[in-house]
Length: 345
Image 1 (cartoon, rainbow, N blue to C red):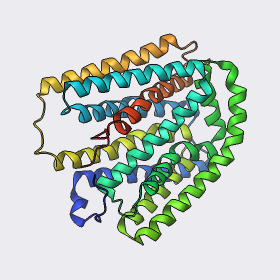
Image 2 (image 1 turned 120 degrees about the vertical axis):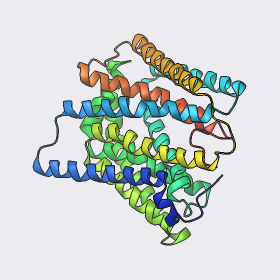
Image 3 (image 1 turned 135 degrees about the vertical axis):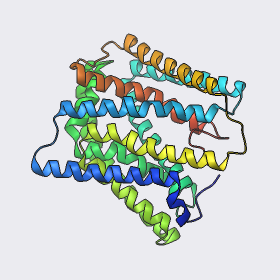
Image 4 (image 1 turned 180 degrees about the vertical axis):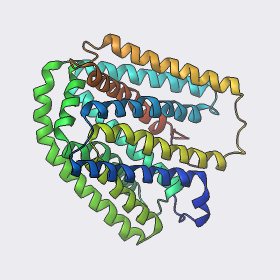
C-alpha cells in the first residue's frame, strides 16, 4: 500500500487529481467566507433554503458518486467476488434497518459514527494518493488522523449548532419511535461537551504528533491547513448546509481525484469493460438503490418523522443514506482487504 511517504512534487500540481483537491479546498474556504459574512450581517438563508441546498447537494450531486465507487471497486474483480460482495452489502442493509426498529437510539449513534468513518478514512486515502501522508507513520497515528478528519463532520456542528442538530435527529428517531425524542435530548446534552473536548484533544495530539514525526514537511503543512479548513467550515456554515455540501464538494470531489490517480497508475493492469456493460451496471445499481429507499419508506412507521414535507424529506434521506453508507464503509472498504472502494496502489 502506498502511504504517501514521498513529498508531493511540483509536477503533481498540474495533474487532474491535484486540481480536484485544490477545488475542494477553494469550495470550502469560499463557503466559510460567504456564510461568515452573512452571519455577521444577520442574513443567513432561511432553514427552508438550507434544506433545499442539502437535498440538492446530497441527492443530485453526491449519491451517484457512491455508486461509482462500488463500480470502480468491482469492475475487475470477477463474478464470484462481486456476487458475495453484493450479498454482504444487502445483508448489512437489512440488519441495519432492523436495528432501527429494535434500538433506534443505538442505530442513530452508529449512523453518525458511520459518517465519521466515511469522511475520515476516505480522506485519509486521498492523503495517501494525492496530498501526502508522510507524517503519518503508524497505524495508531493514521487512525487518529481519520478520526480528526471524520469527526469534523459530526462533532463540530453538534457543538456549534446543537438546536438544529437535535431537531433533525429527533425527526430521524421519530421515523421509528417518536417517544425517544426526550431521551435523545438528554443524551446529546450529556455527550456534547464530552465529544467536543475529546475532539479538541484529538486535533491537538494529531497535529503535534505529525509535527514531531516529520517536522514542518509539506504533508504536515497540508494536513494542518485542511484540518483547520474542515473545523472552520463546520463551525461557521449552518449544519444543514455544511453536511449537504461537504459530501459533494469535499468528499466526492477528492475521491474523484484519487480515482484519477489510481486509474493512471493501474492503466496497464486491466482492460475496460464494454460501454453497454458499464451502463447496465450503473442502471442496475441505481435501481437497487431506489428499491432500498422504497423499502425504507414502506417499513418505517413515520417515514417523514412526524415533520413537514421538506424537513421530513431531509430526515428520511439522511437515514437512508446512513443505512447504505454503513456497508459502503464496512463491506466496501474494511472487509475488502485486497482493494476496497478507496484503493490506492
